[in-house]
Image (cartoon, rainbow, N blue to C red; front, side):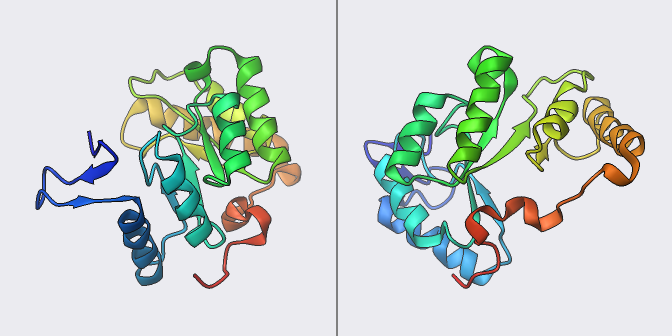
Length: 188
């Protein structure tokens, strides 16, 4: 675990520790130096104060995705919205329990200017439901990994079939899918 007793411990590299403010500076420096448009789980899931600092620092320039922070849970998402933590949620259908709860999380995010990314889980099958869900909910983003295994390729193939079926009605947002609050493209 990277986060222990309120500190980020880099056990596998130089064994250094950083507090939340130092981590925010670390990520902010990277965003200024490299063409980063999205970071997932930049901080620990219970470092709410750190997430707030990070969002205040770079949340108007990049997508800050809460996966472990929100765990597709509307209560955790609501807290994040109220406290100004992150600006995007990773949605994993089987993480919260029901499709209804998943849809509620997507809608809560959308109503509050957060982006939502439909995501696979580790140990995926070739079921393509998340491709349909991503298109059907209009999230504009899907996370299913590189096209290196059949479970992943199946989802990309489903997206291609959907595009073919929709024809001219199909839309591809490109970088605009990340454009929550008109933030993408503003200087850090």
